[in-house]
Structures are given as structure tokens and as C-alpha cells.
Amino acid sequence: MQLPHPVQTYFDADQRGDGAALMAAFAPDALVKDEGHSYRGHDQIDAWWRDAKQQYAHQAAPFEIKTDDDGISVRATVMGNFPTSPATLTYHFVLVEGRIAELEILP
Image (cartoon, rainbow, N blue to C red; front, top):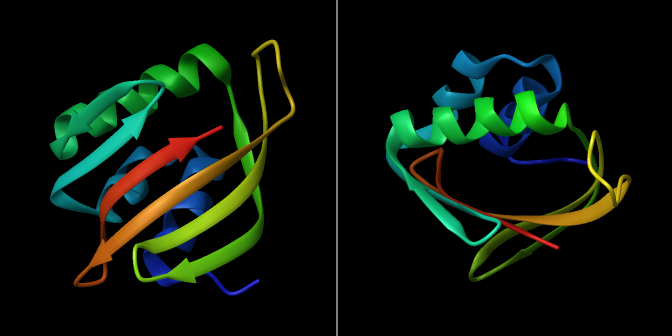
């Protein structure tokens, strides 16, 4: 499966637990929406990601990609320390100038 570079960087960095590489994939004013909360900018996104990693110790394995006018949707199997593991989640990315401008994680 061929993912756009910033999306591949996101999943690779997440898998390695590499917060610096993950943040480099995001635009400085990026927006993340997850579990009913919004996080804007590198500081908030970094804190969200680190908290989620610590709490859930999750790993995401992408298996499907769809591209449309609204962005890129990647379905992934997510495993970790949460009651519904493994779960299939959809990661919806909007890319601007080669970086992630928006990410929404949906059940």
C-alpha cells in the first residue's frame, strides 16, 4: 500500500514511538480531533500523542487507503491496552504543502 509521505511518516513514527519524527509530519498549526477533543499546534498534539501512547500503548497497522476531495482516509487495525482491542479505526488526513494540516480519528 502506497501512503503519501507525511501519512507514512506518521504511522512509521507512531510505530517506533518517535515523537519528534511524528511531529515533523504535522504543520505547525495542525489540528487533531480524537475522542471528542481537539488539539491544535505542535505542543497540544505532542501532549495528546504522548498521553495516548502512555495510556493505551497502541500500535496501528494501516490496511486500506481512500483518497477523495476531502483528503485521505486510512483504515487501520489498532491494538493496545483498551477494552475493544483490536479495533478498526479510520484516520482522516488533510495534507497541505506536504504536511499534515488536519487529522481526525474515527471509529
